[in-house]
Figure (cartoon, rainbow, N blue to C red):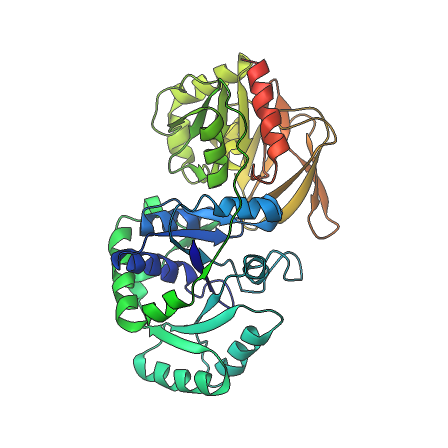
Length: 435
């Protein structure tokens, strides 16, 4: 599979919009194309699927491990791929470039194209771009100037190509109608944008008219992944929550479950009862946004509470954990855990973390360690002892989270099973024993 990375100096530079348009443009040209997203973001991978028709996959060296990240590449079933970088090209964990798009591009030996959006500047853009392209083992080989008119672009192109070794592949004029709206945890989900198809088509056509797409394709290099060691097949049926309130899942987690047990998706918002299952997986999402709809579906809440009381195995991550509480603010939820969550105005915990299990539970035995990520503006007040001892991946901050009730486990951290295969196999064994 040949690929290239799309990156930028910072968040908010138009990477996601450009990546969507580029994927669609390449598909329109007849390429067999798929997409990846560096970092822990869930929302952008859904936009990738909308653009090219194939599931997007995260690439993350902390969550998946270096080998796990390369195994995630094997999920890209295509001849070509676009890798959308996260944040700024060099922005990694804590105050360094570890696990940044730069770090990942070096690890995979993949070339990068810089999407540069000028900020009330002219020639100043040139040394900034030159510095990014020449720092360390930077893989930046070309530039596309974003949100500029043709005349302004012509001047920048001349200066950049005179003072750097980079090729300027084209520009994107201002497209206000294509910009994506955000909410408290990032972009609005793709499934909530009614005219998304038209927006993607508009950006794709703009790229074909203003960018040297053939030169970009020629910059693509062969990327080698690793085969996934699939867990053994189990006689287990898993129910996975999937709707507007619950859509934050790492693709590898779903694929691993599909390959080792039967999986059925359901909607906590719209379905009446929980499907027959041995394992219930409640991922993250926006339950706080759709709390009224979730609360009104009393038959589903009763079904999930009953499943837990009968000893059913449930794993809840972040939004899924919130749903298992008695309340999200003033809206009644499943009530498996005694407590309440509520939204705040600022991020409560954000970034990569390492977890040590304090007691035996669904994911492992006391003392086992997991890698993970947290990103939420809500906080929770819950009765009972915590299960997770958590330490910031780089830093001194330590906190506790996670709660256990019978065969139910819930907490704010998200994990990738590719980076925590021991935990996945432990969970599957646990479910088999408790069927």
